[in-house]
Length: 249
Image 1 (cartoon, rainbow, N blue to C red):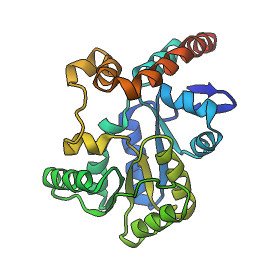
Image 2 (image 1 turned 120 degrees about the horizontal axis):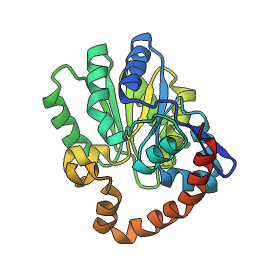
Image 3 (image 1 turned 180 degrees about the vertical axis):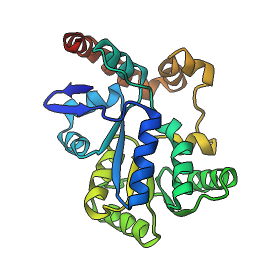
Image 4 (image 1 turned 90 degrees about the vertical axis):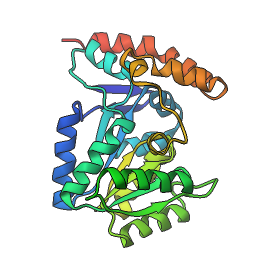
């Protein structure tokens, strides 16, 4: 399923979770890196306005549908696409990495969050090797010298799968840089996923997610930060829906 956002074009080329996990397992076993992005409406808004973000998205090897509206738009166009969010991918991906003997790294969030997530996930998965965790400083430039130094640390630690918890567009831009300078590493942009695992942020309850109201739960939890974001996302829905309808058949 192809989406357009201004001049940018994004293809959701990983429509199912099981297929995605098989692809990543194969890449890890071959020693082949990748960059994985999870597309939502907020990304489409940013892609239309931010050329650097669009450039980074263009080199992502794998893209999933992260958000009910993206899934609905794909289905409106007659495409079968599953909801595959970054947060929900963390544990399955780490199990794949553990089975493949691939060391893991975390980059983003804060030091306390990374330590708590490492302890919890390590206790859940005894075969998992979390070889490197890096909490970048404020003002971190995803294409600057600090980013290159962080990627070098990941390489030195033997990391093969790196979870990026920087939020969009920083994490996708760092993944794009990583594909150039650390091509043996798989980069996965996960947003606040490690914060949810560490307990520093609370995710919407499962029943709220099941009825597709996680966006409302999040907005009510932090209206000052998220109200405008969701308003902008809602504004692009009619145009995206019209284009999806025209693609049908």
